[in-house]
Length: 169
Image (tube, rainbow, N blue to C red; front, side, top):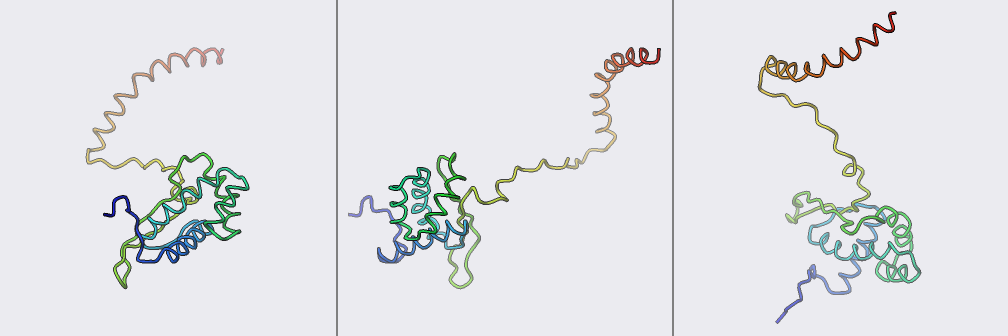
């Protein structure tokens, strides 16, 4: 029985799979976004998110643990200096998978996997939309606006009228 052995082997041996995930994690950390198959991206997310969590605590031991996974000192330096500052207040979910369709040759599902805090397009605040056009006539809309507007206007005129007369005198 294979109870509790739910793990995607990606059609590779253990050594090939660990080397591939290590290289993909290094590429993701260095380039902040990579293009790969959906199955590999999901496996990479499970592999790299604990490393990003580990980099929040900058100690010699945590650097050694991360280096044992990545085997690239430049990626470890990038992870602990640049990435750790951006994800310091995020409680998890450091990666985003954006599906892009199927590959032409073998119809494999493809996607982007990226670090969430490094995509400037997604980080921008949503711009307030322009007033949408309605199918109602302008006369009805203007009548509704004018009915709502005049009520506070006379009080404002009365309050401003004495000050204008005082300035004239």
